[in-house]
Length: 351
Image (cartoon, rainbow, N blue to C red; front, side, top):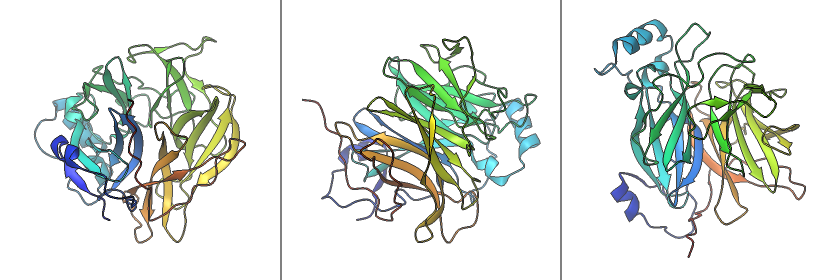
């Protein structure tokens, strides 16, 4: 059975689960990366980076003078020109996916101009908040970093919430990219982020629009582990906290996912090794993942990107879903990459 793609909420409502056949990997057509998967409003949602290497850079009107100048100065990679918006995908069952186009665009954030990637969305205060990377800054002197956008719906449109980046400087050596918003059991939201082999975690205010100190008075707490490169992610299961991240080069076959275990959202964490890496029978460059718990179960699904064996371009990545399982001691089993994907898992509605 082919993965079914429809555009628009009306088409999404018309989709029915057909049998129990899985959706093949990749789950949607096109080049996408860095998928973050969630459950919002009785549906699964995936927010990825747009990564169509063959697309024509966006030169249409609408950019501010400052945005146009930034684009002129920093357009050093062709992909930067097309990474100016996010699409999203939603599904009732992990198999049938609906595309939601341009849920966020840099034209709705005057300080951002290009190279937006790795969106992270969280529901809070009756709205949906999207943290994102923009402009790929290389020093504190440049404009960009991690921004925040907000929407009334998980399918957008998202609009800039601050008028500036939330994090626009390097702290502890961490490039301000790849954010992930995690809500702990007590309701506190933390933001994990960082590139250039450094990972930080900050504590967010209740409105998510500012950073507040940790209990020890620190603000940008570094939690880097050996091998860390980027793409941090956090889950909690049975009171164990799993800090996860990507290792290797994002354009290389060695891109992979590793994790550590700890007693709380700030650790201390014990490194446990890799759980996802290339398989020469399936794909290369498997990494920058996220994980979702199928509601009402102890089933877990990992969303990640990978590069087809036939492709060498760094930008050419595809979205995949596979099962993620735990051992009896709470450690994570190595993820088996497949071409079959995962079977339908409709969300159980409370009676």
